[in-house]
Length: 314
Length: 258
Image (cartoon, rainbow over all chains, first blue to last red; front, side):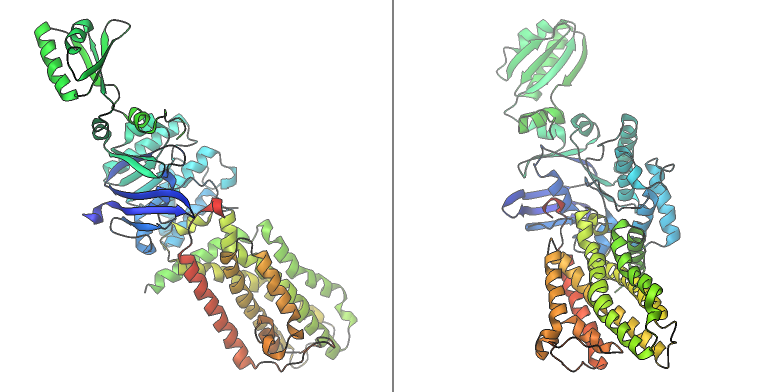
């Protein structure tokens, strides 16, 4: 089982006396997992530990059963698009990827084929032979991404991979991640763009001050946050009927009728009971319901509840 | 043990290192150190028209300029760049994220530095030697002397290169330790015979084909035989590289702290 997971087992990392991350025990499976947290929460430290750029002060990190000290095996499994924006001087994007594939041990012909494949995946063919020093931020980001995927790793770790990309490129890159995830790859992303994280993640890991404060699929995380009543939005023709009935329930803490009179927002401590009651009300009163949706079952809300800010500074 | 893979990886590392540095501005100083004496010899070495005198002049130039100055500083510039330069430029992680054993990485980088250093200073030695003896002819032992000088250049690049590569890993600013080493190497001939043996330059001088006067204050010691000097320098290099490999295994990427 551990050979199919990325496992952090009691991992702590201290920079001298400064805490990086503390007592992290995590198990990450295939699909897209997002790391979310404010600046300094330990996202990059966690990614650097996962990719062997840092060694844990305590604990162990294993990626599909392999430790980073077994470099020859480990780095065939892992590709990392880091936040570092520096490149070796004097090289073109093509040179960089081709040379690094040589360092991997590929023959010149194989390296050339893989280089062009990776470059094509990030749409950089036209600029590939130009020096990286002349690239825009978005181009540098894409060439880093190409470098991370060029050896076709099973685990892709991406630190703020959407930074500097225009909306078109963002959509393309997100589609690429989704394609990888569908092929049972392991994608670990840190991003401060919460609505995009929400859109693409199968699982989130929320970090604060070096600790994991929540992990799992977003619905699961949200349902465990009992301190914060669940908000449910209902679009219907007679919201006042529903409001008057649900307000009598102990688990309902707040009801707001929408300004246009065609919907209401209910805050409840027991979503399951609420849904049962709602079904009854709708049937008994022959109401016409257009939509029912949780209003705060997303990364943004969970982040707000747990971290206490709106996520703009992550 | 996958020697075939390691040799392919070392070959790629050498190529990449040379591609990055050969035409880079940061190596301008290295090229100047190598080229300057060629120009000097080209202009005025025919002034010494007695071969024996010329041999002494050339040996003095070789031991004091090339060995103690040009190769020393050239190797400092080349070998400290290999890791410390990459840490400062925040590009070391590209190598550390490749499926290459860190010992192999250290070996590849060291060989790249050695090739570059030997090419620049070996080339400089050949060119200056040819220019120096152009007017008088090489004599019977000319070729042998030249070959010995080239071996000394290679061993100097090996020894100083290994020291500077390690120094750059141990110290954030390797200039201080390098200056100490420079002082030790320059003052070497004033030291008691026993202490003279704790320097690289002592063994390099021992292999040089022509000995030179080191002034009235120098403590005269017998040169160490080439049979000890060459293996001794190779062993020293191997030991330093082993320590470097051990250290590079624990290197972390914390650029902001470096």
